[in-house]
Image (cartoon, rainbow, N blue to C red; front, side, top):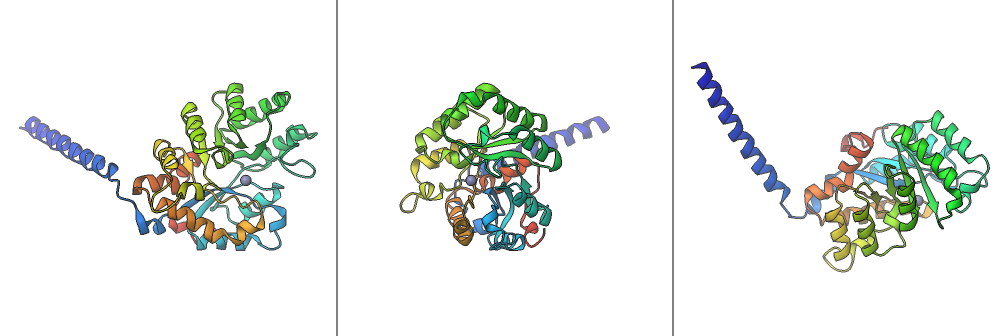
Length: 300
Ligand SMILES: [Zn+2]
C-alpha cells in the first residue's frame, strides 16, 4: 500500500515536472518583445570609466546618482588612473565591480605594454584591490614583441580567474587565445571598428568570448522599427555572451548618461523578455557572481 502510494506520488511528480518543463519551454519560445516593461529591468553597465578629468565635475556621489536615475544597479569600472575606480568602489562597494586599467602617468593606450615597470604595477594593484578584470586596455596594433608582458598579464588574470577587457580588432583577440586558449576575454565594444559580419564571425570562432556593446547602440537600433538585421542575429546567436555599456571615456558621456542608457533600453525593449534580461543584467550576474536587482538603486 505504501509502495503503491509512493509510486503514485512519483508518477504525479513526474507529470508535474513535465508540465512545468512544457510551460518553461513555452515561455522560452515567447518572442513577444518586452516593450515598455524594459524600464523595470536593472541594468549592468559593463563599460564605465571614471577618469581623472571627471573627478571634480562629477564627484563619486553624483556618479551613483546618475546610475540610480537610469536604473543602473551595477557597473564594471576601469579608470585612468586606477585611483578613480577605487574611489568609486570604496564609496559604493555594492554597486561597483572594479577592474584594473594599466594606464597611469605616462603609460597610455598606445604605449602601456612597453611602459617600464608595468608588470610590477599591475601585480601591486591586483594585490591591493579586489579587481575582477584587467582592462579595458587597447591593442591598437598587434606587436608580438610584447608577448612576454602579455603572458604575464594572462597569468595574473588566470591565477585570479578574472577577465581581460580588450579593445582591439579580431587579430589581437586571436593572438591572445593563441597564447592561452582558456584566457577569459571581454571584447570591448565588440571591436568597434568591425562591421557586424566580422563581429558575428569572431564570436562564433571563440565560443567563450564575451563582449560589451558600448558605443554600438545606434548600429544595433538601425533604421525604423526593427533592430538592424545583422546585429539582431548577433544578439540572438550570442545572447548568453553580451552585456550593454556606456563607455564614459570623456565627461561628455557623463553629461549624456541618461540618453545613452535610454537608447540601450530602447534596443533591449525590442527583444523577448528572456533575451533582454540576459543582456541587461543576468549575464553579468553569472560572469561576476553577483545578484543584481532594482533593490540596489539608491543604496551603495
Ligand atoms: Zn572604454
